[in-house]
Amino acid sequence: MPYKFNGKEFDQETGLYYYGARYMNPRTSLWYGVDPLMEKYPNVNGYCYTMDNPIKYIDPNGKNMSEYDTGGKKISNLGGDKIDFIHQNNGDVQIIDKTNNHTNIIKNGSKYIKNYTQRNSSVSWNDITKEFMTDSGPVYSLFSDFSNKGEGAFGSLESYNSIYGLAARSDVLRSNKSKNTMAITTLYANPLSAGFDPWEQMIGEANISWYNLGNDVLFMLVDSKSNTSLYYHIPFINNKKRGQDGFGHGNTYQTYIWLETKKDIKQKNDFYLEMLQKRMEAIHR
Image (cartoon, rainbow, N blue to C red):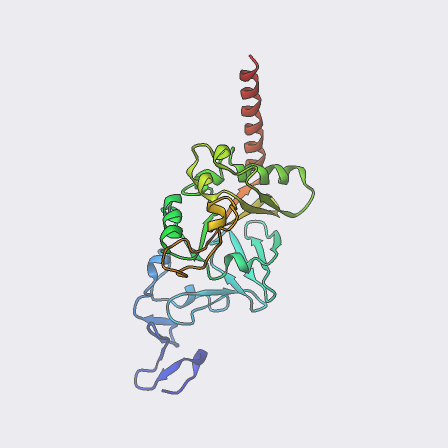
């Protein structure tokens, strides 16, 4: 079997190329066999090669497609049809809003996105906690919402009174910057401020950044579960890696990314201020 097209093995008997997961017919650009991961692409024919767009995509193994820009840098499939995430050679990530072509840069963004396991909205705050306690599940988890569904963690993060969302939205509205990063410390994120919100109880201290994309703003919250955060930085409590001693509590890392329009940001902020004013008036009656 000589190596030819795309560096893949050419089967002289069948005239097909072997990609590992299945065979491909180069004349018709069709796979022989259904994509093993076709459930991830419900709107795409399971037999076609790279959604019939080999200029923009490649399929190195017959399973996962990868998207590349004109400079050859890999585009993450994270943002779907809303946002392109283009990983740069220096570790930055360029983000492009597909609806308006506005761009921005997440400094060292690959550190918080690349090789993270994309989790769905059925994963709860309790699941993240258990995974930390028992050394189970992914070490690096990524949650995203680009359609404002407000499911799972985003039912909390996208709410008008979210500690994290409120801080970032207020900064967006008063800032003339194109992006910013804020540290939400225990002073603001603690069991008292979280109230009955289990996600805020679980997240605690975190860093949140925002990126101006024209009519939209992309938010990214970066969190980790560790012994120091669990015990509120009590001296002599040390962090440890996953599986270090077999007793759980190995560090885990979570990234939450979502998109909001500037119109929604202002409405949420105004509503929060209105509710705050009513609460203050009720207290002083």
